[in-house]
Length: 255
Image (cartoon, rainbow, N blue to C red; front, side):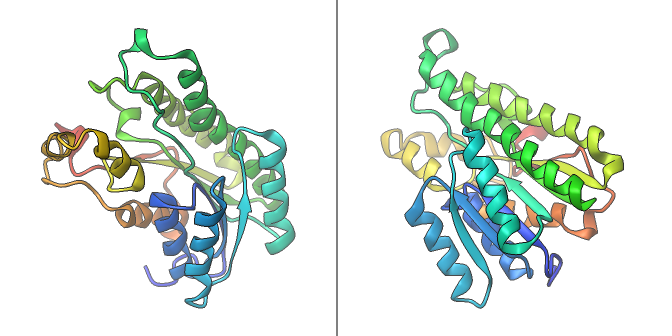
């Protein structure tokens, strides 16, 4: 895919680690200029450093994706710096600090997960699309999940609800803006070896074997494997692809 997004401007939320960092690095390797956005300043600036030390161009913006003013400021900084926005990867998200059956899920956990994972994607899309309409083109990829396509046994009702919402939001936006030259897709990762998973396995190490067993390929995925899918969806090679939920899951939902 050498140079498949050459000269384009890409925004990645949740870019301080994991899938977001891998996607930012892949965008940069393919010739894009980056806006790396996250609440985590140190991690976000480290991602920027990883790009610039290899000759790429990137800036960091601290953002709370649940805040209208913060998201609006992030888009303003993007346009102020680079003049436009061609590609957006709305990736910021959390799993929630509590795993419990639905009737035991604390209300504040539900509210926080939905605010970041669903409202955050909607807010980012709202301002990204406004800019893309002004330009007459653009591509957006939202990070959903296999848990946006199937149910779960693991006490993650808020997470599943939020990711199902991202899938529906993606499909609806793709129809609303197809004739405006804006493509909107989603990736649905399986279990990916990220800091989020590593942290969860610290308290429940026995889960690793169970998670791997649910993937027909016999392993968890790597962040770079999701990044490749995101960048492809944002490239001109995917010019006829919109409203698509791309599973990158080692066969998880095919069972």
